[in-house]
Length: 206
Image (cartoon, rainbow, N blue to C red; front, top):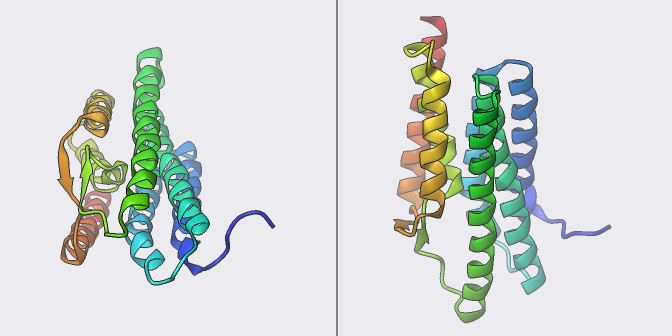
């Protein structure tokens, strides 16, 4: 069979599967379920690199890991947020244009990151300490809190969502340094995600 199969790719595949389920939920008008799947994808992506480092891999396996991670991220943090947008009202031509810009920005960022990361790994085996621009996985925390505002901004929420997609698209490609989170930072983001889930559940019942 084509590909490399070991435990280091499991979280990446889980992230992709979760995003596909999320897209299905979005088309079924279950936006809450879609947002939850986005957060699950974010959780999986946050720890897949840590898992990968627990195993000594060949150069081919490392390159394979970089590629599948970015391809999975494009679906989870590019396509899924756009599909959510379509189902909250971005279904006119300008909305489709904004969704296209968002996915394109994610695609460009991920492809550019692959080129830089492959070159970096040829020079050093040190762990990356910072990113350029906003990582696409930030969607997993940004979109849920924006979605929470839907319960307060009902008539024009799609306009707010469109504005957020445009701003995030710009931040994907803008050159500024973002410190890569440590284990403590990852735990903090997990806690923030859990709080967002509880907030959304509370708002759903409110």
